[in-house]
Length: 212
Image (cartoon, rainbow, N blue to C red; front, top):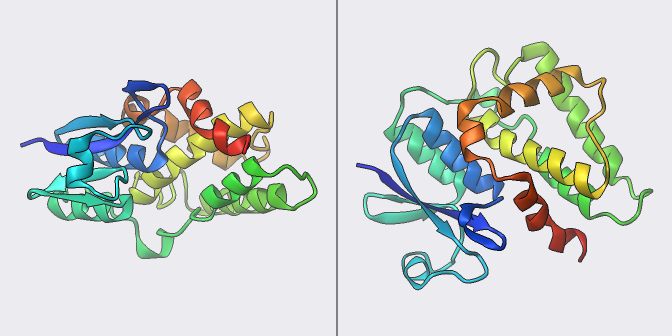
């Protein structure tokens, strides 16, 4: 039986998959595990009544397990691993938090209006740390095989590449060769191509935050 999955619709295009990296992480996991699912696209600016009835907080992504709608991508991915153990996407515990500060650093730099506030340096430090990790353990975070940590990082790195390229004309330094290779590997996976938002919707999603 297919799982019911609710994720963000694109800004200004309610019938198109939206730009939420946490939503993409969930459907990436479903695709990698070959689990059947029905996708419900939720217009965040005008949430449907049925959705608020089952999920009063109105957050996405949510997945229905055993009749109950469960929010939070961390929780959802954990349940998917438990219910659908093959193929395993378990990340070894010592690698589970690799790259975990990149998204926050990216958002701070993206929103920053002051080039001297250190947000760019903080992001570069996080990207360099990931580069060093991949150099030692790659091509994926835990070695040869894709795991949950990669599926969490892939959408965030996609947002970073698209949004910083558009709003700041900024790109990841070329000397981070392992990181560039890692991004290529992630973005070329069938599951990723199938579940990513179009670049214009990523840009539309960030525009209000950048211009705030």
